[in-house]
Image (tube, rainbow, N blue to C red; front, side):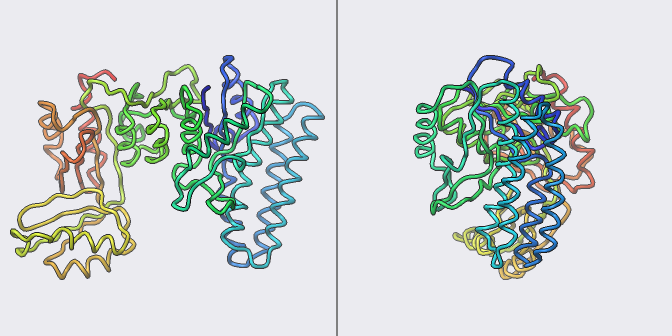
Length: 443
């Protein structure tokens, strides 16, 4: 069995839903199809929820009315028969009645808000289910709230999910297509909740792990993970193979096609993940698995919005416990560190959440002189044992010869080398590195 996942833009217009139908029926393999909400829906529901939490019910009702109008128009374009249009309209009327009921709750709370947010995926999957039925394609709707659950720590309960999901499939009529919602789940109290990390991608990964799928396919409008940022660098190309760790590094450091944590369940259970394009379904895309290739540097990613903090103190010299006390400051303010470099008298770190920067700096000044550099960018080079292979560092630093480098970090991971530069040099660095490190490589 294969798990297919389609995001909001892939189902954002009636003709795109038609295209998804073609893609999932191109062969006779059994599939579980995970859908996101129709593009724009979740953002609108978030806005509606915020208005209701602020007790602005009339403004919220107005937005609901406009959203329903969009769905009425969507339904009119999705179905071709009178019966299909009737069923689609019925779905929209039923669920918008429930949404309107939520807007009438005088003490609307966060629990109600999570219920509200679930309707995006519930609408898209129900509409798609009826479209497939109209087209004569046997399929079954698998409500995620019937099997998808998280524990008190927000982690998916894979074993429980597996038992429930397999039981539903085994005791139901056998069909080639199962349609389910991404993003939504039940929490440890049995209440409607959502998956924070990677949303629908996370759902697909969890489902793949739960049923021991042959493969999880994540379909977007991009033909796989590219070797560099195509918005900046010309002639980038999709990478054919990545390990899970390499993909996670790239996702964390700027590759937007994946959330860095979304494929963890698939990685844990050894389920390959393939990134495919709805715009070019014949393209092979990128396969993410436990198999590592021989290519040293496979891709480059860049993460903006970084702040570098340097703490200089002669008290560091041979002082055990110094770093622990230093890190306790960041822990106190729940601020994670991306990079770290040390010398005998100084420590430099980077953060990407400056919310508590002033408070952090104030406490760090008790340790020594603190310097802060804002508007920095981490450039991450990812591959197989990149830091250990002969000649790799020479190629990197030759490419960066004319670019000031604030920090360098490697050795902490076998998969990446990270460079910190001022954001004004980002474009020059990406282009220069691209010309140097990929010149003789074929991925």
